[in-house]
Image (cartoon, rainbow, N blue to C red):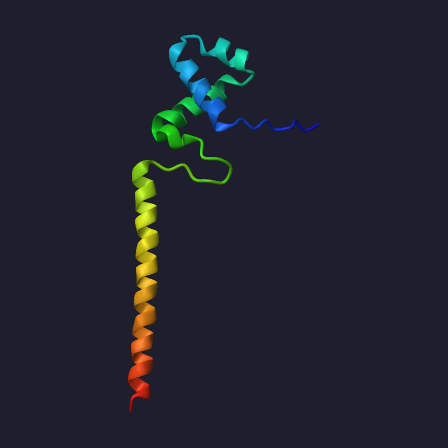
Length: 99
C-alpha cells in the first residue's frame, strides 16, 4: 500500500520552526504537530539558510537574496544581448538595401 503524501503550507512550516526554536524537546514537539522529527530538523536547516524564502512552493527554487538578484541580472543581460543582436541584423539589412 502506498501512503498519501502530506503537504504542509509555508505558514505551518514557519510556525513549526519558530516553536522548535523556543522549545528544547523537538521529539515531543514533532509528535504534537504530527510530523517526523527529521522533517522538523530539515525545515529548521532550510529556514536558517534561506530565511523567509525557504518555503517557496512546489517546483520553485529556494534562493537567497543574492542568488535571486543574480538570476534577475542574468535575465536582464540575456534580454539586452538579444536586443543588441536584433539591432545588428537590422543595421546589416538596411545597409545592404541602400545600395
